[in-house]
Length: 149
Image 1 (cartoon, helix red, strand yellow):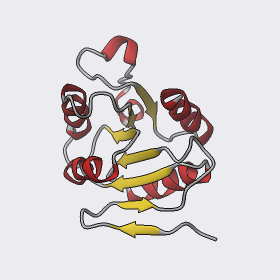
Image 2 (tube, helix red, strand yellow; image 1 turned 90 degrees about the horizontal axis):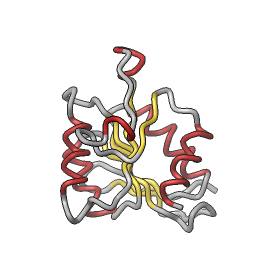
Image 3 (cartoon, one colour; image 1 turned 60 degrees about the vertical axis):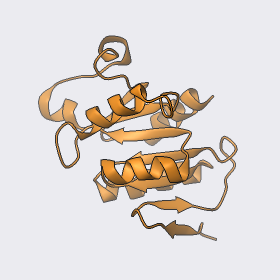
Image 4 (cartoon, rainbow, N blue to C red; image 1 turned 90 degrees about the vertical axis):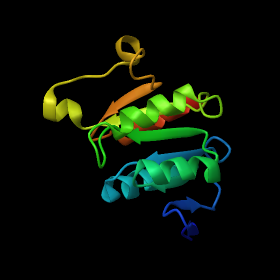
């Protein structure tokens, strides 16, 4: 039977059916690509995670308060080219959210050749990890579990 999803006022959805993953850990996906968020949600939910989705940074910030995520998957470029960068810096500079692991998702590497790394870019982009799009499902689950472990 499919999991029950709720649409909340802020436009994100929360899967209310638990799972066998890491004790129903909550993951927030902030990405403007609805096809990507749907596919990624399915992968995460199939691995036992609860998922909330926001399609812009404003809804993402609201979702953090409502869903209390254990980890955030954050797109680099949304409405503005620097939305993800700015949201990540805001999250990591706030006492309330600095401990939430953030994995930055980017298609920038394929478009521009720019690569991001937590080892070299931590000072100006304090994400805990980076994944290039398209995201390999097994690698995504491995990285998520590593940061939540």
